[in-house]
Amino acid sequence: DAGITQSPRHKVTETGTPVTLRCHQTENHRYMYWYRQDPGHGLRLIHYSYGVKDTDKGEVSDGYSVSRSKTEDFLLTLESATSSQTSVYFCAISESTGSTPLNEQFFGPGTRLTVL
Amino acid sequence: DAKTTQPNSMESNEEEPVHLPCNHSTISGTDYIHWYRQLPSQGPEYVIHGLTSNVNNRMASLAIAEDRKSSTLILHRATLRDAAVYYCILRRDDKIIFGKGTRLHILP
Image (cartoon, chains in turn blue, cyan):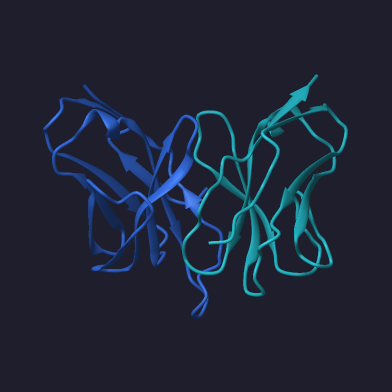
């Protein structure tokens, strides 16, 4: 299995509080992704990173920010959590081959976040 | 992004082959067809991908129509462990956009 860990694995927080989720990889892969998964919506891409300090928005980026200061860590921050951000969050990694990063993505175990 | 259409759910008997269909009529020439699956309470895992030719690996086979407007994931001998949601995805860049997938039920 690819070396991807997510922390925390479970978190309960209150509306309005800041929350940071961490994704850590030991594979030295260039690409990292954050997804959320909600019933009836499948997985939706929040943000992704194509290198240190290089990030871009996905389809549901509002209310989220990310940072990648090291290859191995990709942080997802909810500046002021809302109940609509209650979800399961998955991190994924992928390496690139040349200029086409079409290699498979490896997913972490997920973080279950509940915002009360 | 080009979209895919999959049945919401399918059933199959254990130890029989399973054919999971996917329609992607708006596929472009540079789109790769990827399949992922998600077992209960886990993150998705890669199954297979292809561009034009049929592909085989240890997990499954991918049959791609000649016009590339549809494809079929084939599990040659389903086991109970294959019960999962299967996602058919078109990729042309570094993002994956997941649809809702097909929930596959395996009957013992």
